[in-house]
Image 1 (tube, rainbow, N blue to C red):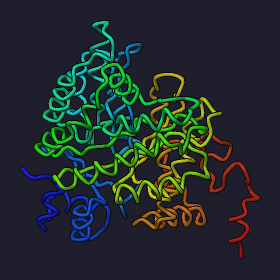
Image 2 (cartoon, rainbow, N blue to C red; image 1 turned 30 degrees about the vertical axis):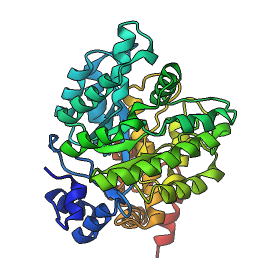
Image 3 (cartoon, rainbow, N blue to C red; image 1 turned 180 degrees about the horizontal axis):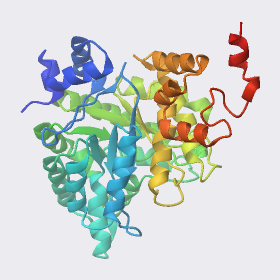
Image 4 (cartoon, one colour; image 1 turned 60 degrees about the horizontal axis):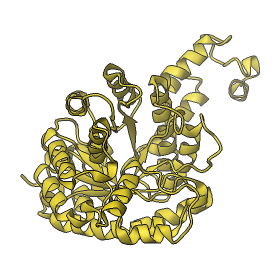
Amino acid sequence: MKTQLQHALNGQITQEMKDVAEKENVNAEWLRNEIAEGRIVIPKNVNHKFPARGIGNGLRTKINANIGTSEKRCNFAEEIEKLEIAVKHGADSIMDLSTGGDLRVILKEMLKKSPVMVGTVPIYSVATRLIREEKDLALFDPEDLFEEIEFQAEAGVDFMTLHCGVTKTAVSFLENDERLCGIVSRGGSILKRWMKVNNAENPLYEQYDRILDICLKHDVTISLGDGIRPGCGEDASDRGQFAELLVLGELVDKARKKGVQVLVEGPGHMPMDQIEMNMKIMKKVCHDAPFYVLGPLTTDSAPGYDHIVGAIGGTLAAIHGADFLCYVTPAEHLCLPDLDDVKQGVIASRIAAQSADIVKNINGAREHDYMISKARRDLDWKKIFEYSIDPELAKRRKQDSESGDDEYCSMCGNLCAVKTDKAE
């Protein structure tokens, strides 16, 4: 069984490539070449059946929604409802980040029910088992981690966040440059602690070839995690962040040579004036690999509104090179997101993606805005709702207002500028 990258390198256009090309309105041969160069990936495990989607250069900016149980709140039925809400409102993938309940049963059910890509962070499962057994996180057996990676690959996971770049060298740069918030990545913090306590190199880096063999077998896309990402604006663009990035660039090359698809994760917190520079450096160092960013969050001062902050940063990041936006919900930094948080997070990220795709002139983005603008000029509410990112909200607000089914809205009433301008 070959990976999408191997097929592309051999000049073969797979059914998945044809499906993505048709959905994105791009030439299939052009798409094949972009996959061969590593600038586009199609995360689709051979064991997971769903309509393929592409991520990367020249394609529509994609959206991921994080869902999953926690040790404090474990309601699997609610997480399935979150999955359905995320997909309904336009998420292109979900990540199962569950840390409560029977994690393997939960993952299998997520894979069975998800009509989109599914991602995971395997070290969470290993860490969760240690906590239940009241063991020190620094004492995990690397063999347990590799066994979990293999289990998830066989189960059908499409992409995995693996913090392979948290090396001794990268950590040394971090420790020689004072940080305000330290490491905020759960996976990164666990690996750093394990390395310190055991005086050993990160097993995910040291045995990277082993990971590649597993991913090659099932066509799992590696999402190289940014375990030393900045957790506040003050820490953005520091030595630790860039030291890890240099390692990730090296690992991108190794994955491609092996025939394994790979994307790279980007920073979480970053002032607006640093985003363009970071995206360009990341793309350069990682040879144009697709970039997956959380936010970035452009200010740390808006708990409860971080979906808005993330949309601001996500727009700038996508304009300057990010290809995949991980949503941020109003619950970020506060609590486990509820059903409405999931919707708000997906919608905010879709707004960011559409705003960036207009600038990048991605197929269909400008045409979409043209159609809703024309509908506004024509006072055609049916089409306005049809082209809205959240048609349910737009329709409800119009119908619940004083204008009801009138052709004008309750803001302007009979002073509607469009109506006046069109009058003969």
